[in-house]
Every structure is written in structure tokens, then in C-alpha cells.
Image 1 (cartoon, rainbow, N blue to C red):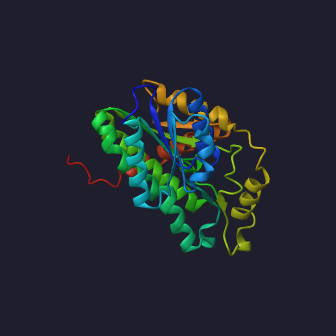
Image 2 (cartoon, rainbow, N blue to C red):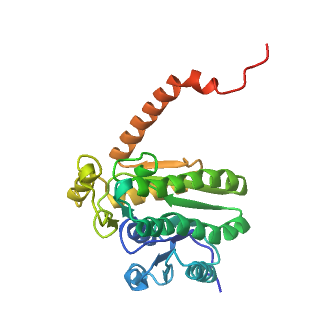
Image 3 (cartoon, one colour):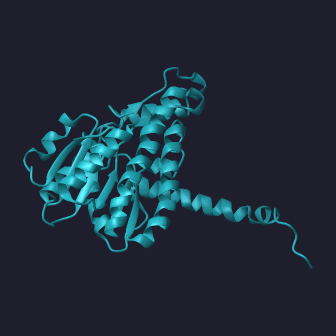
Amino acid sequence: MADAPSKPVWFITGCSTGFGRELSLILLKRGYRVVATARDKSKVEDIVAGNPKNGLALALDVDKQGQIDAAVKAAEARFGRIDVLVNNAGYGYLAAVEEGDDADIRAMFETNFFGLAAVTRAVLPIMRAQKSGAIVNISSVGGFIGFPGSGYYAATKFAVEGLSESLSKEVGPLGIKVIIVEPGPFRTDWAGRSLKTPRKPVDAYADTAIARRRQIQGISGSQAGDPVRASEAIIATVEKKDAPLRLPLGGVAYDAIAAEIAALRKEHESIEAVARGADYPKAS
């Protein structure tokens, strides 16, 4: 039997560390109902241990459709609804395009993109029936800007952003909003446990891809971004009536995206004549 109506139900993937864990803890403290998931259920059981009424820990590998279906069914059976889906599960892969290993690239796409899409498809029927809901897709500043050494990671996040933008136009009229979160560097374990690197580095990229790889690994633990403040910002944005489609998080992300937009605008204006010249000439 579903619990009596109370605060919204949040279903979050990838809760063992980082944003997923912080979000779950903050939400439970505020009285929300939370479904905290991870591939290893034992790593999220402590999140809900002190709040068994509002918290539910589930095993969920987003690469496995059977686990997705079972987790969504269990969440609905327990709480009767899902109000907010946070697609947080994912990891990084820092490699120059030439350095990329096919198996590693495909594995990352399975989690970062295909897994996200599969979880979204599983939850949407519930939200459509409710005529309400929010889908929060954790992207990255690297989902807006392609940096050297992260082309494949950026490709997964660019894919998430394209999917999210189309989805927002499909489900907006149904009462469901979509928010793309674009964090910069934060003090999570992304640059440690959650980051993979190429098996065969290519020295030719020492000043580009390899240099950036070392930079990211070198600042692990000293990033400017605070995961707790970021989680609070996500919650506040979800609760806004007119939430933005994109939510950059951290000064690094905000400034980098602003500079990228300015550069894109300048380039876009510079090629107007070339672009328009590709049309059939207008009849006199």
C-alpha cells in the first residue's frame, strides 16, 4: 500500500557518492521521500538507515533494463508515485580521440547516455499519469563545451543535452519539466574513482589532452565547487515554477559557458553571408 501523501518522491541514480549521495541526504533531512539507488545496494543503505519511512535503498545498474524496471516498480509500489527523477549515474573518460579504446568508449555511452535514456523511459509513464513531474539530467560543463582530452565524455554529455532539450518540448505540455545540470569542477570523487584514462597514451598530445588530464587529476580534492551547495541549488531549481532548462553550477562552469556563448555568437554572425548563400537564389 502506498504511503499517505506528503512531500514529493525523488528517484535518484548513482547515490553511492557525489551529487547523488548529497542530494539524498539533504532531501531526507528536509522530509522528502527518496529512492536512493546504486549498483551496490550496500553502499546506499546507510543513507536511508535513519529514515526508513521516507527512504528506500535499491540496487540499480542503469546498464541493465531488468534492474531499471524492477527499481521503478518497487519505488511506485512503496510510494505510489515518482515526482522527480535525477539521472546522476555516470563517469568520466579522459582520452584524446586517437587514444580512445572502443570498448571503453561504448561502455561509457551505455551508462552515461543509454542508461539515462532507459531510466527516463521507465519513469515517464508514471509522470504522464500524474500529469506532473521533473526530470533532472546531470550533464557537465563538458556537455556544452568540448575540451581537449574529453571528446568521448563530451560526446555522451552533448547527447544527454540534445535528448533533454527535445524531451523538454515533448513533455512540457504534459506538465513535466526537464532540467539539465551543468557542473564545473566539484569536490566529488569524479576525478578519482569515477574517472578512467586511456590504456595507451599518445605522446603527441602531451600539450593538449595529456596536459589537461594531469591538470584535472592534480586538483582533485581542491575544486571550488561545493557538492552540498550544488545539491541545494538543484532542489531549489526543481521547486521553481519557471525552472530554467539549463543550470550551470559553479563559477567555473558559468564563466566558461558565458565565454563559449560569446564566441559562438561572434562566429555565427561572421558566417551569415556564407550560410545564407547556400539557399536557392530567390526569384526576382
